[in-house]
Length: 394
Ligand code: SAH
Image 1: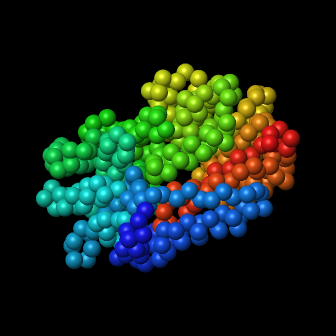
Image 2: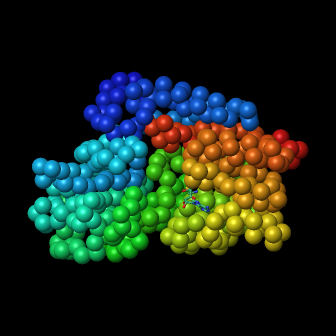
């Protein structure tokens, strides 16, 4: 990234303070990387050497998933934007330096269309009104775009005309979904969904594999850095061709599918979210893989069942959410005793907690730690860690 661009954009966001989403915008990008590197070192240095963090060449507009909340202000004007960090207050924005540019444009266009279709915004206090949120997901490699309209009720007057109009303005949109969320909840998406246009899913390509993405299933939000992260995870897994690999917390199966494609003997994936598991199964098929199976369930309970059946695993790749893994999972991991464990984490605090547990209760030791900047301008940092048993490797 050129210094000029960095200089111009650095801290230039007009809602930097109000929004609070980009906690590090006051720092230049090289300073942000140094900040993250020292955070990881501080938390993990006791376990092993921390490699230099891998940053982005262009750390802007990297988010492939953009979400906007809608409301009508006291002057009767419709506002769309993001929640102020840690609050329920919406900060009106039309564009954001870390979000996909096209996604932002689509959200503004939806907002501008609402009055002419006499569509209202949802009012959280009364529970009345129509549009709550708009979610846009874009496959950067395929250019497919999904528009999800989250509404307070199922009734969507002149929906066909609305969809026709927005698709006319943005032919890049390949599918439109209505998600109904009538609940008084902080969750963006409700349970019921209707496909209004296209297939209801989009596809993206990562590490040469195609992935189907549903409105609700987790997909990494920075695909450029995800490829770097997965390649590092595969390097750590060091697959020779006949290993049994477990992809725990597998989402739509991305890591397991890349592992299967790169020569794993067989792969098992486990994931709590049913939609993601459905996508994972479909993704395995679409990539022509027969040596991979996916299960829906809690990763900890699943690992315990695998351990009780006395099955053998060579490599466990685990990628839990921010809360980290669980004691039942880690205990079963110790019992199963795979040769190699690759732990991918989006939260170095819970990572440190889990590594500490493994170090105390087993002879697993950390061999390498690689931080990757998946979320430039925010304080978040991703790490991938290689572990193996004492005496088994290196
Ligand atoms: N490995 C995937 C997803 C990582 S995000 C990828 O790289 O895209 C973490 C995933 O863990 C989410 O899909 C979430 O639904 C899932 N998850 C959360 N708690 C879980 C649990 N207890 N058991 C299994 N999966 C869980």
